[in-house]
Amino acid sequence: MTLATTHDPAVHVQWFRRMLEIRAFEERVQELFLEGLVEGTTHLCQGQEAVSVGAVAALRDDDYLTITYRGHGHALARGMSAEAAFAELMGRSTGCCRGVGGSMHLTDFSRGLIGSFAIVGAGLPVAIGAAMSAKLSGSDRVAVSFCGDGATNIGTFHESLNMAAVWKAPVVFVVENNLYGEYSPLRDTTAVEDIADRAKGNGMPGVVVDGQDVFAVRDAVAAAVARARAGEGPTLLEAKTYRYRGHSRTDPARYRAPGELERWRARDPIVLLGTALAREGTLTDEAQAEMRAAVQAEIDAASRQAAAGPFPTMEEITAYVYAG
Amino acid sequence: MRTEIAMPSVSAGMEAGSVVRWLKAVGDSVERGEPIVTIQTDKADLDIEAPSSGVLVEIVHGEGDEVPVGTAIAYLES
Image (cartoon, rainbow over all chains, first blue to last red; front, top):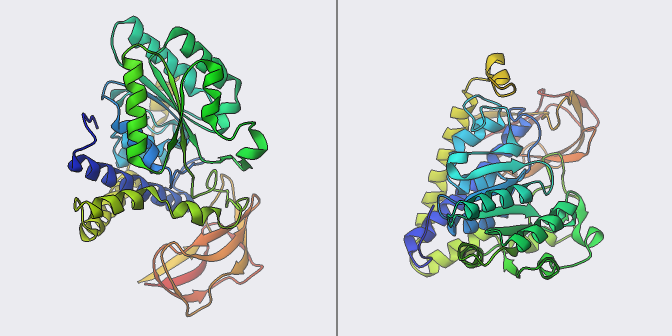
């Protein structure tokens, strides 16, 4: 999705639809996982949809993204088909990585999705590399690196920010702070409350963003991207957000304080956008309900189609391991 | 339509789980996504949600039963 302006209501409706798609996709992944159809593990992002959709809305089609193992939302936001994503999770050769990557590695170079990393913090240096390739070749493409709050305690995070600042790399670092690193609350592991405070020490602007407000995310990323494209270097954005589910599917997330989940659900990003769209007359409640049903039907069809896909053959698998 | 609720597979290599507590009784209405039973696996206790809305019409395995993955533990009528 390439957007020139945020003021076009038709575009806001596209964001709404995409967030509905991500939510429905994640809910279906849960069901598929319990049926034993998803290979390996999975990390879901219900509650965080506005960050991926808002950020992607500020990018050009030829910009680069590195994402994390909690990356289904980003891949779908960037236009990956639900069927290709489902098939990848189910280990089918019709998946975006021919079924050999799985949930944590949704990649599609044609959409600028140059890597989805299971190793915490590993995407930041790769994003800098992509950004520098653009800078050295004289293009104004930028790279966006998504990571979580936990990644900001990794050495690579600080090394990457410092290097990006020194080189004025055209990169934007988006931290999705969902308050937990696996099962550990932020306050138990992290010396600052606002991750954005770590920007100054690494020589760049740091901005806190309401991660549940898709407009706020879009505008903050757009401003950071404009800086990068103009050669002014990197920015650290911290999106305050929350995941409704546990860290991964086997985690029932009982470590949360009572009432915390409900407080965040009261600021559900899809509901926030839907309320705004209804208030402005862009999309009535009835139209939203119809859209929700249509999206659910598409997700149902995509998961069924993906489940019918073939598994990779032994010949296919070794083709991606050995050169020649 | 009668929908089977089976002991799910929540981790690679999981062979069985136990029923810890039924959160709903036979005859109760349930909504899609509502937790209906707590199961115990080797990793954690987990609430299983209703796959669709309907009425819980049969409980096959009661509290304390150890059940192989994939075996029916209850039925919903939607």
